[in-house]
Amino acid sequence: MSFSLDIKNEVARVSSSKEELISELSAIVRNSALINENIVIYVENNAVARRIFKLFKDIYDVNSIITVRRKYFNSGFSYILTIKNKLVEILNDLSIIRDGKYLSIPLDYIISDDDLIRAYLRGLFLVSGSVNDPKTSKYHLEFLVDSLEYAKFINKMLNNLELNSKIIKREKKYMIYIKEAEKISDFLRIIKAYNGVMYYEDIRIYRDHKNMTNRLNNCEQANMDKVFFTASSQLSDIEKLKKFNMLDLIDSKLKEVIEYRVKYPEASLAELSVIMSNDGIKITKSGLNHRFRKIKEIVSDIENKSI
Image 1: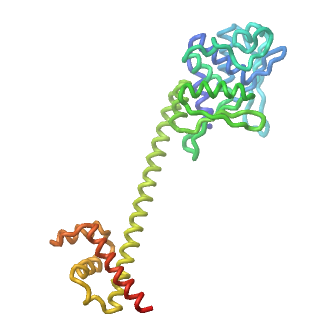
Image 2 (image 1 turned 45 degrees about the vertical axis):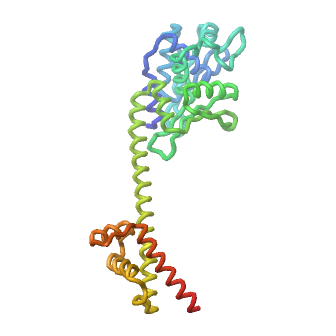
């Protein structure tokens, strides 16, 4: 079972006031119904089909005719709800038509307060929304709608709720989408998918923690590689001094750091500073770095003179 299906199954059981249910049904009919002499609604989710049947029954005392069809290749069922009675009353009440004309955008009373907006978005998600499981590589929630005007209407509604949604054209339709994990979680909370929110947050927090751990491990590995490269370079310079018989000619302070570097070849400069300080030789990491730079300069001068 997909995460989207889980969310729709949960949302299909949400209780609301009559006004909220009208707003929810308005979005459902606007985005899933074929309207001619009847209202015909196509859905692919049994729980959503039962929800729509109940909404028409509870609000308008109308029984929908439900037809169940098996989809191709036995990949589940589709559900067709047909409403034959009170069409004009229902379509006017849901702000689908007004004065005999179809409305692309519902009238203000459908979304006149925050609760009605949430209900409208819930209905929209039930029939045209989907959301990726947070276990997948991408956080993504989307709605597919039929016109740019309507897409802008939904996008504005979502962004008024600070969900940072965007619009993109998708073939003959328009997609409104949200990519930020926290905003997707906020949307699930808005439509009252509280079990979905808890699951989503658990997975999101786990993924964020795992990513942070990986970043820290990568950073630690990079630091270890840097320490290894630095120590190898310093040991190489020391070997060159030996090759050129220069060890007896350099000053005592340089001999000191050479002795400790050879003794502790895998230590970082910070660790070497602590080791030497514990032995009574007070020197900072910066001081060590300065002395090893001096050794490198001596080696470079010798090599240049040998050319």
